[in-house]
Image 1 (spheres, rainbow, N blue to C red):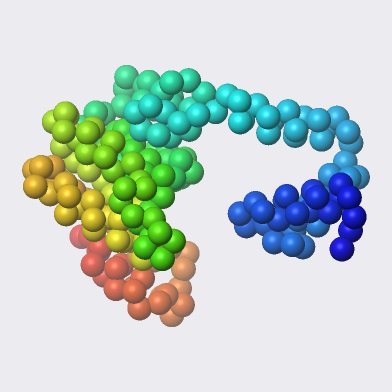
Image 2: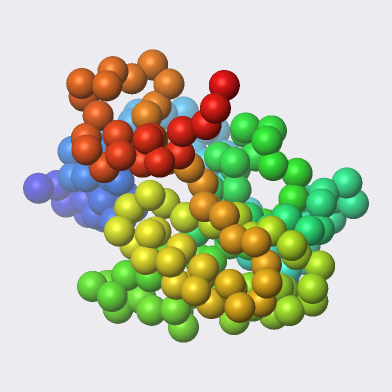
Length: 197
């Protein structure tokens, strides 16, 4: 539609996850009309993240040092390990202030349609961590979708013979939601995960 640099920018923005053609166009024109200082700051932040951010050598969360801040924290429990798909899931769980253990980031979920099998995830590294004998509870916090469920089931079968307690995050109704709008699977899981008051 456009030519030169603006079309190149729209094309590159459109390659980002969750950014469609119209959003890419809006962002590109925002960049075009923005103050040059703001754009330089954005470009510097993009460069800095590629140069300085890496994956933690223990849990594979994002880090600027060899280990992430959670792995460096001596106050965290070593006997509980929460398995998540992506680093953004660590942030979501940390916001709850409910979990004080350690994490393991798989780097995705099993998805045969996309050609992603167990060998494409950090499962070998997880098993190595579990073999130390420190972990007594493994919490599977993969997404509640087909791929996340398949990954959780696979890990549970792999870990059960080790004698480690394996649990899965409960799923069900969101706070403030109406029962009439809940699908059958969500409502069924809410019943399964119910607790006494």
